[in-house]
Picture 1 (cartoon, helix red, strand yellow):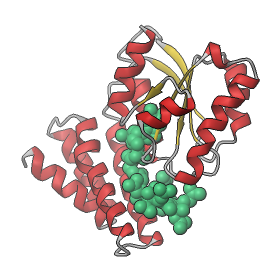
Picture 2: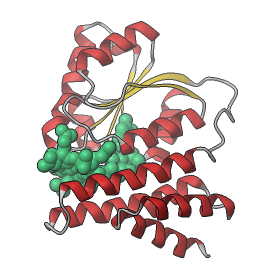
Picture 3: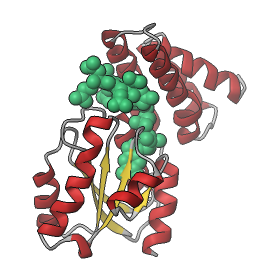
Picture 4: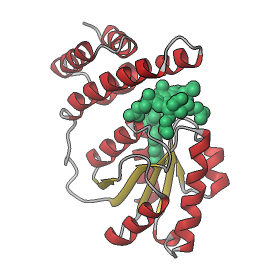
Length: 214
Ligand code: B12
């Protein structure tokens, strides 16, 4: 099967919320030597974007979105095993990442965490709906130099500004680079709140972080 067809079917498996098909297609991509990140971005994420559009138009409802997300997560779990973790021997930095307080969306954040690990960062994934104070405490505890937060909703995005303020109040802001991302986040928002880095996707995050740190 050619790559485009594989991506198309992968996207469709998410729209159909067909977990078995998604997993089989992920396995097929690995067997055919397709780059796992290409398969995630070109296939499964594209399907999730379609789900978002359908949700917007009232053609898909929350329970269906939950099952579609499960299918995507199952496929990503398979693909992640094919990523060359630890290919970089030298540790580039210690990163904390989490979905900001009030936000349970964590698929994209998980992909960013995985990519950072693959490219030599030590990553502490705090999960989703992470209180601002937990980010701050963790920076202190593990002496992290990168703090990433993910926001997918306009209502939770404000937490990223609160995180900037909390790091400043704790005297930690100069010790870390902050990065923000998620569907509602833009470069303009990052500039506005004083975050060091905005990335559109996981590949972009790795590229920009390396430029910032090395
Ligand atoms: C899947 C999904 C869900 C799933 C989440 C499952 C999960 N475990 O994550 C479920 C069904 C649970 C869900 C729930 C809700 N959702 Co929802 N959801 C989505 C949907 C369709 C896709 C999100 C997704 O996973 N995309 C795929 C990933 C790969 O993309 P991504 O997250 O953008 O991540 C990439 C980049 O953004 C970037 N990135 C992400 N994080 C970070 C972090 C850093 C540091 C960096 C550098 C980069 C980065 O890299 C990632 C990889 O490339 C979006 C629509 C959309 N267009 O985003 C709505 C959407 C985000 N949801 C929405 C809403 C409203 C909700 C609910 C409130 C619905 C409800 N009525 O209950 C609840 C929220 C509950 C809560 N408190 O959080 C709205 C938000 C509207 C807004 N602008 O505020 C959206 C936009 C849908 C819509 N159009 O209305 N949702």
